[in-house]
Length: 148
Image: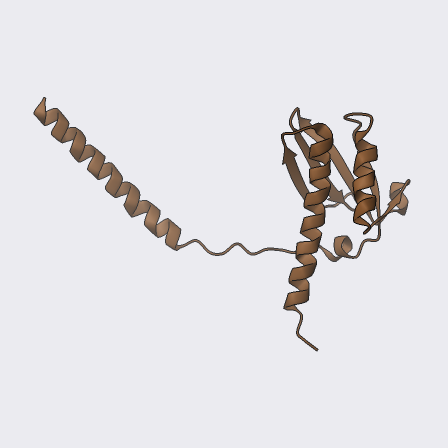
């Protein structure tokens, strides 16, 4: 019985040593993640078309109100007249996804996901995340420009 305990202790010590040996070099090699900015098409856009699945009758209205409160974009009724299309859809019962795309080519510029909460709450969160991303990118770009 004593030899079993000794063998178990030795095995645990070896496993911990191996774990420490392999995780330390991996951590040392991590490089900072480079942050890419949203493309100019997104940062210079003036109008959007909202394609919001009718999860609930009031959700598209609430999302439109949130965008209007932001005051950055004019909302178009025709996707062909908009600079960007914001597509909000549900992929699971507690998940909503926002795709920011180009109207004519359907190229996706950026996407984000919101989890949990109510359907309108998730959709509002998606708009807030998009707003935050644009504002962060603009602030970062302003800081990186040389002073006049």
